[in-house]
Image (cartoon, rainbow, N blue to C red):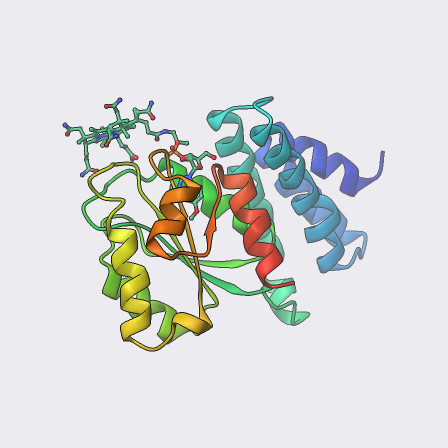
Length: 210
Ligand code: B1M
């Protein structure tokens, strides 16, 4: 088995130390940083994302795989910067105002990063104006909002309205998700994309950047 294939498999098992060591081994073998990222780390994370979507693995497995991915990336990052590998695009992500649930949001973040996107994580309890200010500041193409409470999902409408007021509605794709959110809710508030899980959120976000 090649070093990248082994890296992908160990990442899926969440073996952070081994993944880290294999990234170093691949660097020592002069494998291109972009290939290590795409064919080793992202390849493993994509498989986990697919399995998560199909209920073949669950939250803990995704979290440990993501931890392994982050460890691998930490070694690779300086080389990627040197090689000028650009993030495919920037996403502003947060859990909406009044809502402190962040486990699902963190999964969305990991999956999006696994697709090579830069994710600005605004944390929890994020008011609409903050999403918009950050999108403007970072020139982000996507605003992604998570909500777990029926009482807080209404803040997503405020995000859409604030984007209009601030004149950036046609420049940003607004994604929504979280347990109480549905596609018909998305439609009713005028947001662009609803996805039921983190893996499909990452897929749809990556597709926005082509
Ligand atoms: Co809370 N809580 N909670 N809670 N909590 C729920 C959500 C609840 C359903 C429990 C229940 O009553 N059965 C209920 C909501 C009822 C409702 O409104 N319909 C509830 C409540 C009522 C509350 C409090 C009000 C309780 C109280 O204080 N009386 C309170 C509110 C605090 C606040 O936010 N202001 C509260 C507090 C908490 C804790 C702090 C204790 C803790 C959160 C810890 C944390 O997140 N750091 C907590 C937890 C853990 C839960 C449950 C048990 C689990 C949520 C979770 O993390 N699931 C939850 C009950 C349940 O779901 N069984 C519950 C795992 C996670 C991976 O799933 O976040 O849905 P989820 O993410 C999914 C998808 O939704 C999707 O991707 C993920 C899977 O791939 N997704 C997106 C999420 N965001 C997305 C964004 C996208 C796309 C997909 O695009 C942008």
